[in-house]
Amino acid sequence: MADNVRYSDADLEHFKGVIGEKIEKAQRDLELIKSAYMNDHNNGTEDTSPTFKAFDEGSAVMSKESNSQLAIRQEKFIRDLKNALIRIENKTYGVCRVTGKLINKKRLELVPHATLSIEAKNMQQ
Image (cartoon, rainbow, N blue to C red):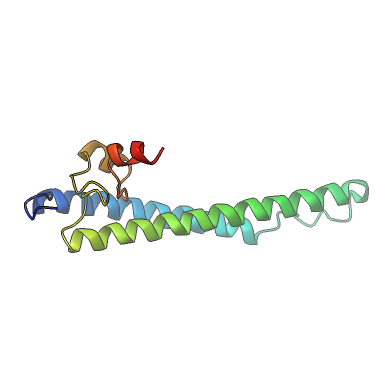
């Protein structure tokens, strides 16, 4: 990888702002997921429908498992975004880790934590 193959400081600053906004939104979403996971949503009606209690309990377990998986994915997304901020500080952000070429700006706008160019992604398949 040549030293001149990197985004300008202005570009890096722009992406830093994009990533910062995504981190804030992702953290808000994570809090919503966690609050849904912690809340059992029974509203005190557990003794009014004993016939369907088994189905309701199964549904609650599935919902908690689903929310747990969502929370894990969201935490990984936040971690990936924070790693992208580190790459910005190191001035290696936006450089494909396989080809050493710059990742397309439009791709980075959509997937700011990307570490592979489309070319490298296609080579994986």
